[in-house]
Amino acid sequence: MTSRSSSSPSGPGHAPRKTDVGATSPLDGKDSALAARATDESWRSTLLRYYSLTKPRVLYGNVLTAAAGFLFASPGHIGWLAFLAVCIGTTLVIGSACVLNNVLDRDIDTVMARTKKRATVTGGVGARNAIIYSTLLFLGGMAVLVAWTNPLVVAVGAGGFLAYVVLYGMLAKRLSIHGTLVGSVSGAAPILGGYVGASNMLDAGAAIAFLILFFWQMPAFYSISVYRRDEYARANVPVISVVRGIPNTVVQILVYTVVFVAVSLLPQPFGYTGWSYTVVMGLLGAGWIAMAVRGLRAAGNYDHWAHLMFRYAIIMMCAISVMLAVGPRLP
Image (cartoon, rainbow, N blue to C red; front, side, top):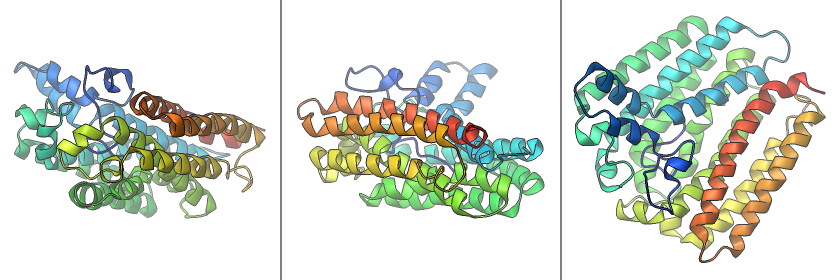
């Protein structure tokens, strides 16, 4: 029940190369930066190192989509206790998965410049302590979901955790060019968990919410694979830009951007939102498609274009979360 991070194509970045997203991206490089600041043995530095292992910005992005899914499925009355339980439980489960991902990815993170200062790489947090920390977060999160949500939320949370840690982190990312596709399943789990937390059913709205976040991840994380290509190649991570080259990746980004925009416009035809939602997301989607088309003519300047695509992806994620939350309440 988590979006990808660490050394995956959605992972945090490092400073300070001009061609990297680095500190300029709202999701890039912050966990390593936090860990690098925790240089002493004070309790504050210790807390900061453990906090950094949860990949805070990736974590909060996922929780934002979970909250959006819940509100999307609650056009009338909002069950605030269930809402808080979904958000808190999801936060803990995703944090647990991110911590465990840090432990599993130490070999890759040691090679990649932007991740080599993570606490599990430098020894700031030992593997044993990180595993204990991850276990406690997972048990706490699942306890909250079991106690105050419904079985569907629990199933989505556990399934998303396993999909991210095992299917993606341990297998697909290391062995297959399709790692991003596999990881997108876990990345779309939070919004699905939020939706079923409110509706307690799997219906067309649940499918639409899941597919929106699933397809959003493809152009977003393929863009990262473009400007991080050299790092992934050095770490032997078979992302699409390494295996098939950047021109092929650019075409895939365009295709998935178009698919995402088409899927993002489904809520209104299915009766879940009004025209306000469609107008906003239609205009933003058209802008993202136009930017994706520019990539076909970006030879020699792919890194800059990919940075812009990823930044626009963050805008789209925030916009889709806000509009799914308020769209059912607007004309």
